[in-house]
Each structure stands twice: as structure tokens, then as C-alpha cells.
Length: 234
Ligand code: TMP
Ligand code: ASP
Image (cartoon, rainbow, N blue to C red; front, side, top):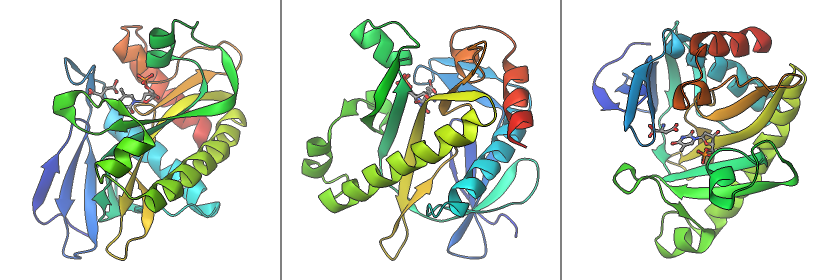
């Protein structure tokens, strides 16, 4: 399958149409951003690792019955995905306190919580992706109540599957961000990448950070963190 027309360039990926109106090609870039693109950089070969890591994770999720947009990886940086209408929400699930939640609530990073926290953010760069709740989503018609129920259910299932998948590889899934899209028939499926850009991943024993926080916080050894995640998932 080949790229036809260029559709869209995001912060970490580019999107192209294909000859099949139901399929797009996603191209993973090495560009890295943080804090709503106020911080910009390059992580060498990140696009290759995130493409391959996303493939492994999406195949695992599909094998567990999760509907997803992933079709096949084409090469180092490209994958074919089903074309969806993205629901403009970022769904975050947290298994440990970290990142913005640690900062907002002034709770020490790393505290385990025994029931996952689910947060919704409105995907709108010019507003800095503000946190909203389910009643905003319904009132603003970003999704219906029924869609939201499907999204919550899928998000919790995905988190449970991936927590186990990662811990079997000595990685703690601290939190993750998901996006969902709608197929023309109305079905809601998981879309976008799941990678060290969109999850917090800590080594089980040392708690060493193996994700984009190394870039966000200038911790160094960024490339080797992405490589290590890929190595453990293979
Ligand atoms: P946060 O603690 O900064 O709110 O991030 C929660 C999770 O969401 C973390 O795994 C990183 C991920 N995330 C994204 O994928 N994109 C974003 O724009 C942000 C802010 C976070
Ligand atoms: N991807 C986000 C941005 O640059 C932020 C992040 O991942 O921390 O806006």
C-alpha cells in the first residue's frame, strides 16, 4: 500500500491518504515536544521505536478482543491504519500518582493507588488540552453518553491488559493516554499510538524512567530508554 495525498502533520506523526478510502498511512517522526510544544527537540530513531512498540501493543490488544485502528506495519516508520474520525478527547488512566496529578494535588510522585484514576482532556492545542469531565463532553457534544460509556469501558480494559503485559516485562505502567476514533459505521475503536511518548513506564526494580519524561525533564539517556522498552517488549 502506498501514500497518496498528504492529510495532516501532527507533533509526532504525519498522516497520508491511500488508494483505499478506508485506510491511511501513519508516518512516525523523531520530533519530540512537551508542554504543548513550548519545548521542542529530536529523539534519534524515536519514530522507528514508537512505530514498532505501537505495533506490538496493538497486536496484543487485538488478541485480547480490543477493537483498534491498527492494520499492519509497512516498514521502520510507517503503518497502515483504518481511517477514523478522531473523538477530540485524551483519556488518561493513572495507576500511580505522577506528572500533572502529583503537581496539582501536591502528592509525592510514585504513590500507588488501588483503583485506577480516569481523566478526560479536551484535545485542543490552542487551549492547552484542558481537563474536563463527562458532563462537559456530553453538553458540548464531543461524544454521546453511550459513546462515553464505551470509551470508559475500553479504556479500563486496555489499562488492565497493558498493566499485566508490561509487568511481565519488568515495567510498571504508571499511566497512559489513549485516543479513540469512530468508523463510518459508528463503531468506536482505539486509535493513535501507545508508546513511551504517551505512557509513563518505570523499571519495576529501580523505578528508572523509560519514557518521554526523560525528555520533558532533561534527564538524559532518552534514546536508550525507548530502545530498552522495545527490547523488553519483543
Ligand atoms: P500528565 O501527568 O502530564 O497529565 O500526563 C499523563 C499521561 O498522559 C502521561 O503518560 C503522558 C501522557 N500525555 C500525552 O500522551 N500527551 C500529552 O499531551 C500529555 C500532557 C500527557
Ligand atoms: N505531546 C505534548 C505536547 O507537546 C506534551 C507531552 O507529551 O508532554 O504538547
